Image (cartoon, rainbow, N blue to C red; front, side, top):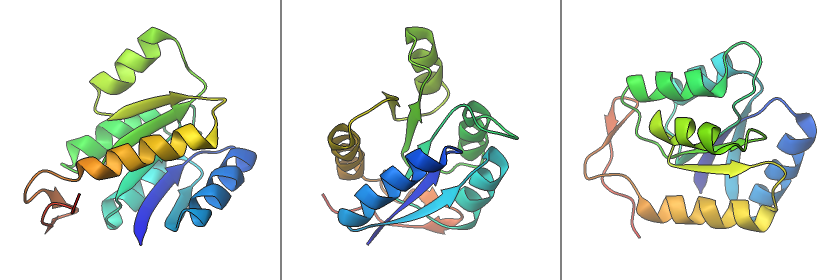
Length: 137
């Protein structure tokens, strides 16, 4: 079962995404603030991180930077209400792999998740200090 870390502080969004991803057979861990998101990303391997930008404590841009600084190459999908082209460019430039603007349709989120998962990890990428072979396509 693929593991996804969802970092978002909006309970209605979290519940909607968790329900949809459970139906798609994903295991979802949730962090409601940036610091907890970083902590979880550093402690356990995930196949994907879904990250809001506007978070309490530490914003999603800071979370993304910290995750990448720690050499975690897990795909990151920003899911946020900040939809200006400048926001998208900043998010992608600091290390995110994709960017989806709220409000969104679950069918598009799910398609983007599948696309990111198909890419897999580069050969022998270190995730949280453990070497993993590439994910099968």
